[in-house]
Image (cartoon, rainbow, N blue to C red):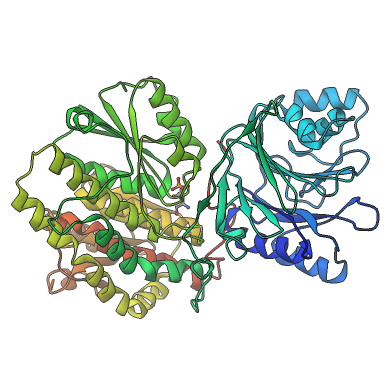
Length: 611
Ligand code: AGP
């Protein structure tokens, strides 16, 4: 979960690298560093600092680096505390090679012991430093890229690396296995980055490196090779994101901007995928129609927020497509004795498309003959390249670590996929699908109505921001909404929060209820509304601090709590797309009131590319 940027061209590398790092800070922010080839003697000169990128920026103000070739890194610590010495870039014994790395080297201790025996001096506790000393060991009268590939072939684990060296100052080498790395092609300049936002303002012509591929860059050429040096032809793609999407556009935080983008993203997704005759367009897949028609079960795999979207998906797909749906978090799925075979369709959900556990789960399922469709937001990400079909969510770059717009875009994609499957399996009357589609198309406008009163939601949040723990309750399609609301709050405000199926209250959690705990009750109009009201009455009689999310016009819930956040009436089937907005805003405003770093919460990173 670190961020890498590399530059080779004619402009001052420091500025390009620093700006790129800032766009990647959501990937990790406990230390950062930069190395630039000195024009005086070609040595890679290094500056690095613990803490956020601001610390590095201040250091560079007083100790700037000059040169036109460089690499940079923002770190999410895996091995070794976030200190100056553990910050990347790391150098070899002769300070002639500099390297940055994203990933985990699982066999680094064995390699380190051997290198120490051979006389290499280590300056950090990181696994990364092993790589640069291995390169040093092999870098004898061979090109840098050959020494890099020799070293990488000895590694077990995941890596994306960028490397520069004194002996070949006009060369920048990148390589990857298990962690993302893209190549940006410019005019007399080229780039490396973990993720597109780092280089979007310079170029939109991108090459996505695949597993066990390396790239050799000069300022006017590129060559992609495998780890045995064989040249590989790669076709650049044009990334249709614009850099403005990766900026705050006047909002205080990326998270708030992304919450407010949701109606437009969903509206655009519906326009993109629903044809005039209401047929669902899903061409980005190569699974034969008869295969999709004959699938006997679907297994949903995902992590975190994406997993909560998958839980809603279970209700949606079972209800519409009458197919048994299993679901598990990817880290559990990947190690189970999977009952997955050629009759299984795996639905992998991931905003980044780089989550290590989800990728590993997909690979396990494919070994057993399953077809894989992914719901993903990042064009060309690893998961999309290992899937048999991809339904992109087109939500634009999601910078806030707490996922918001990606979640509702994933839900929308799931609804559309369910309609698609129901249509091709001919199990739902066309009239019913048409009615559902018409209701789904009203959602963006209903979300806008909720966002119009977000200041009220902020007030409700601040009135409860002092409480030490929260319980979120929901039923049926909104049980996952309760889980998602709790995750949003805990990951950005650090308040202990738990999501629960409301029907489980009497089986234990009701013991928690007292006047010191907030209970968020998700109670929109639904077939189980009366059951939710009973739960709220039980909480009310035990003095719990109730925040209710209810449908406009609901006067009954007002008798039990003054803290009601109303949402527009909508079919229960689509209510997860509405109730989550108040939950996101509650978390945002509570975290803000508590002075937390909303966009870069402690200990987290945007994409978990390591186990
Ligand atoms: C959600 O707010 C978290 N940032 C986290 O749980 C995230 O959803 C999870 O890591 C999955 O990421 P992915 O969608 O990129 O696979």
